[in-house]
Length: 218
Image (cartoon, rainbow, N blue to C red; front, side, top):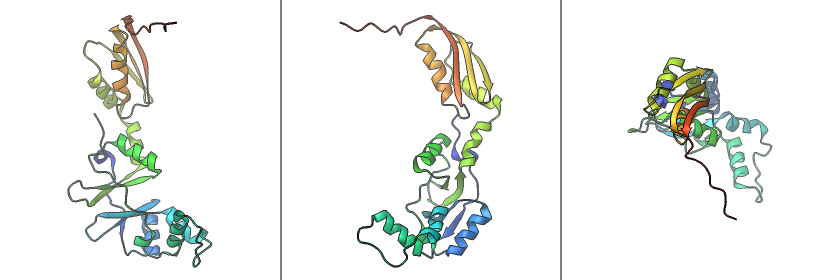
């Protein structure tokens, strides 16, 4: 069973309006102990995200008024953010979002690829923010009860067992016997995709080897 964002997400939408001041953004981050807030419009639809890095530019950017013609577009954008005073000026846009039906595995991949620690969760119909997914929410899948993980693994094992399943700290050991060596893959690989599984140790034996590789022709 694939765990979805709605199963682990926070139900509080950590967001500020586009005209929120620098001080209001800092206050929201402090209140909810987060490193970023979603910027929303009047209809609660995400416009972008303001992170701690965006706010820190106020302190680290040495240039506030002059801009060199040789600067990169990124550097000019940093100067603009350093001089910004509202959420709409500070934010990075567009906002990277997920929906309640997004799988936690896909959300984790997105966080890793984009190097972000939280994602706004939006309603798939209205586009409005309905919650927030944090890294700690994603990591909760690795604290699932052992019985739940085992049930999900047995649900994806091929028919024709029986197979033994042992779980220790997220590492799954599968034992049993199949007729062909190629069938071993169909036993172990689906188990790797089960939420909460860190690794799979295969102790399944086979009667016949149908994966013998022919030697190369000379």
